[in-house]
Image (cartoon, rainbow, N blue to C red; front, side, top):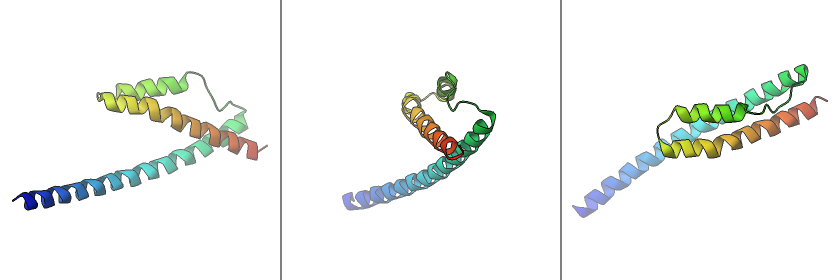
Amino acid sequence: MFYATLMHMKKILDQKRQSLANVDAGLLALLERRVELAREFATIKKELDLSTFLPGVEQQKIASLKEKTHDPFVKNAIEILWPVLFGVSKKLQDEVRAEHK
């Protein structure tokens, strides 16, 4: 009986690992789309001579996202992850703007 329970739990873990792998693949696709959009933003901002950084916009977006979840762990993850995403986008936009000079 104990062995059967262990095997069942291992099967469940394998299924959960596959589910996580699927989520990771989806996140990767979304990250690639976000990078694509950042490139487009950079080109437009360059043409309009706009800054890649607008004070307050990032904090407004983080606050808005945090309002959409009730999970404290997710709220904390937003506070950690989104500044990183913004930093990556700014770096990419700066690089694209430099290429077009």
